[in-house]
Image (cartoon, rainbow, N blue to C red):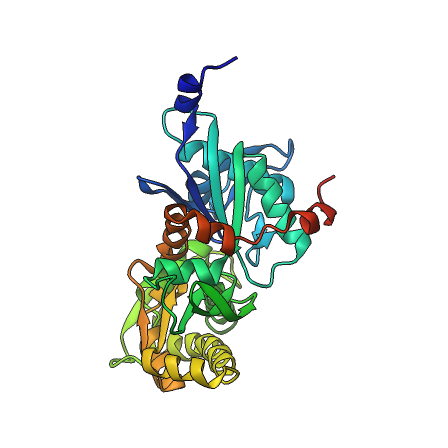
Length: 357
């Protein structure tokens, strides 16, 4: 039997896990963010073995070897492929641990507000199989609020818009509780899809995901650019000949494509804000909304939202890390963690995972 002192060496500090469709971010109490990698696995199609995880798999995407395919095991913020999600999470948790320890004392994970019991059970199972002692789960919107600096003791309401790759969560929180929340399985990945479709249909160029992501993060804007003639060269494959090719696209060409997606998110925000109780509405009128998540980094999205809903809109510091930082704060207040975590175990134990077999 292990002595307590030697057991302590095996136990890592408490872990916060933001398992997202695009990225998995893990933070450890006392160490901050220790892992930030794409939620991807590379699979050998012949043997079905996973040959790479995370960043290593991401580096292969679009340039895979003959028998290798890169897949995202999470779809719309929930588990799409249970076995591969489990293996990917176990790999990330092991990587995030200090000094080769095998156990984590506890972890808190985020989940979308409209998660079903089956989806929640799948997330919980994946975490438990990563050798984590106790797993707490809490709503993404509330975690993002805490990470963006909203205090659990604040009685006035705050509005958080968390824009992920495949989900957008709107949470209105006060006194450490979610008053109301809306979640759509729709996020900034939609911009990638419409940009790729536009280039293929109208410019005859097929481009890879890496190229599209680069256009979105460095060239696209949610707000009408001052100079709509600014150009960027995009390289890819000619749709008709199959040969390597390049086209020039302008800011003015990209803007309406991006704006159509951002408008959908803005409409969702507006609709949520029209259903608030008077006191809550008064608080939001004073405070405006806070943007978190990777989608908050889209150039001009705060300005666009400000104009659309006629309220102040600000981007949180390090918006991609708001959720994981909020989860991490829970370990400083165990009572709050117990109160906000959604681990209805009796319910969860009855939720069968159809894809576990």
